[in-house]
Image 1: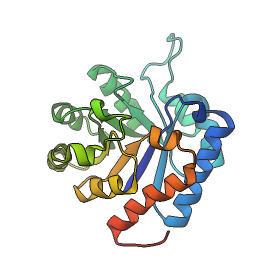
Image 2 (image 1 turned 120 degrees about the vertical axis):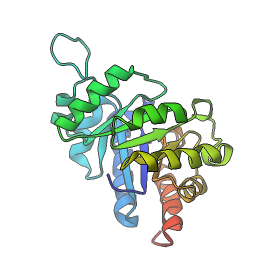
Image 3 (image 1 turned 135 degrees about the vertical axis):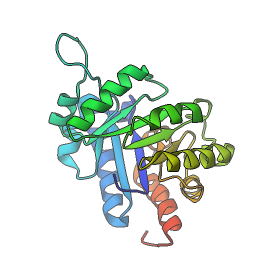
Image 4 (image 1 turned 135 degrees about the horizontal axis):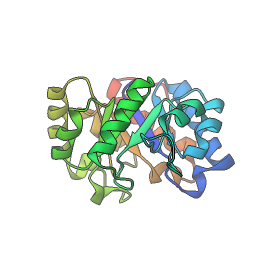
Length: 229
């Protein structure tokens, strides 16, 4: 995983599927190529193959299950790998899983050479997840998700504490999310020590996704002291 990272979670909006979802992916790729900023997409299972074969930027599943066999509706690690995913988002506040489910899924992802981004809502959960060695941890206070009130402004102390915890755990990267809407939000999160940001509605519901991608990328470039926009 290359950082600083901008991770877009497609969720299940009208813009998340079909041609609309694909066009957002192509705009993300365009901005990533022009700026050098790493942009990754977590997309619905039905979009993994289409998006991953149309763009070169990293594509992740929004969720994955550990069990093969007689489990109707499961989306398995083998399925997302075959479809072209680089890994999976796990344990989002809108799709919580048990610690056992998480452990077994991480084991399957690692065995398949895929990455994992595990969501947590608080420091205590971050500590529990960190010992499982995911590729990255995404901390998001649920009360700020979708509010437009960025965690980097509302709860900077949470990011600082999370950064300290992750550094003691080892090699995991820390992504922060909830309420991220602007380049300034991105810049502030990175200045506080995060390795990237995660967001959804600010991009997926934007009237001009390309302009929003450029604004978010500006925050990364400002942090890096560069200007390529």
